[in-house]
Length: 416
Image (cartoon, rainbow, N blue to C red; front, side, top):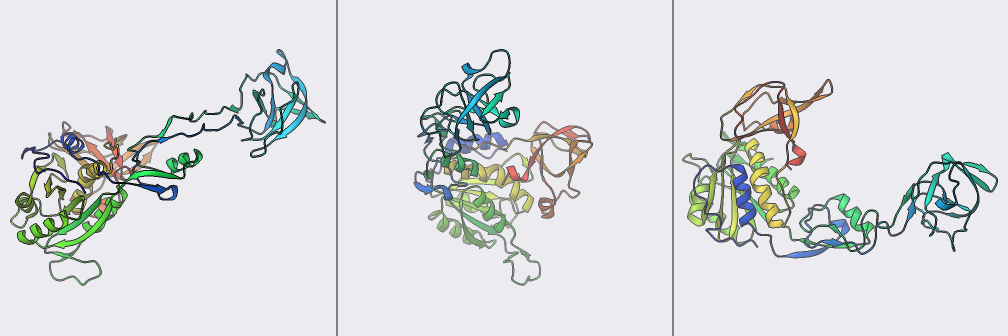
């Protein structure tokens, strides 16, 4: 379980720039110590705790990259085609028995081990066959169409670094090296609360003034995608004592708590006050939009992140604050997503001093990728998340965007 001191952050109440929040998280949140050994079938999305060292060369032997005929380069004529007898055959998994004959070509197939001494392979479509002889064209250099042993990774090299969040490609690499088990970090247990008297459980009838709780289900899915183990802690009422008790109890059994709602300055916003009463507040306001009122602190050694209540703000602040915290607890070598350059298909004005994220769709026009802003800007518009492709990121110093300007775009897939 994460154990942070109550002054682990001690930043103050100033409006915090996003990079400063990321530095603070990276410096103060340590990986959970627990590790476990898993099979390759369980590896996707886990964070590697110890580097995978190549136990063999990859490929483990020199082999042919094509179907064709292998020969000794020194047997080839220097100024024209070469005709050689064909002696032997090698296929993938069925290597040539014995040594290759000098002055002869070998029929060989893709992936087949290349016998010692044969150092050039001709593609079968480039040669001429006459009985048991083959005519090899002039022009290939030594080692053409050959894959040497260790071309991909040499024995003893680091194949996958510790801290990497494993992908299907990593599973393929580990398997190719003969590894059937990997040591990974434990998944952090992330407790997810929603707060608000207005919230109802999906599937239940709505009472007057009530809305269904959408954030809790989105957050649980986001936690799982980030490599955490979500713990559904249900809903908390707009009652300071109840919120304090709920957070206190949950902090004893989770590695991280994530709440939505109740962190602004309204009379019914109690999460920040409960956090300060039960533990310590690290920061409260971050210079981003949507999502400025996002809180982070510590309760009994357990970090807590209080996200805003509006769905779009929840998604942005989770991606920018909760995601790096889960990465830090997981020992993951996380880095902030990098925006891709696209052309703005909209005009926009913003205040200096804060980073803004504009929900947008990508369209292609005359071969150019254009970002088209969603027609409604409200952070409570759930369809602004489902009918767009990602976020246009506008830097703190930007105050205006005109159509045709280059802007940075982050696809949803890079954020969740």
